[in-house]
Length: 249
Image 1 (cartoon, rainbow, N blue to C red):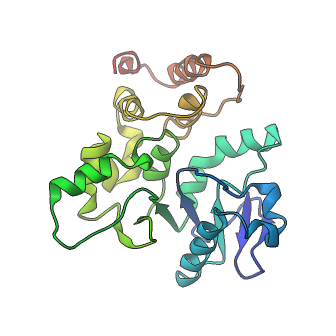
Image 2: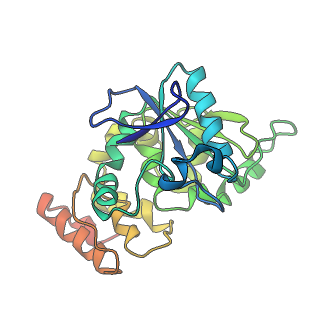
């Protein structure tokens, strides 16, 4: 697992089995000029990219939380290596579980506590891309602590707060699974499948791959197989359970 060492000039450091709670993770929806693994090796050039500001900010947050390492999916996975990408995607849920905290950056939302209107707030959340993407499902459920930040990096609360009710309404995920993420393993298969039905991914294969951790499944990635990936996922789930709700969601 590649981690950014914030105590060593933001150098990437490979740690095979990082200690639990020793790092922070950033969750975001990708935008223009995100910093790749290759670009991050040249910090001076990377700083010119718009995405670098987000990396710097998460490093500051992690330092305030007395953490040494951070993980950001844009620059901590060598996506030119199919083997590394496959390992990362199959391990990602456990990486989020092992993080001390997950900072969620919502770039299309501005927190405005003044003139509070619950209905308006919920409508604003429902329009945020972060709550509609496939990959962010595990990023919401796996970490023990999730902190939400708006476009201006203003903190507006955690998953396990008054915000939980609104997240449940927007995502369709029952509050019990937000309050106690470890309980997702007891959720019927059909319920877990329903959580992804409101979400989208850029590539069709990723609708299956983003669910590997949600179902505790490991399987090889075959980009180019399209919707066959979802069929393979269902076959793997069938090997683990006789829960017929898999086909009725």
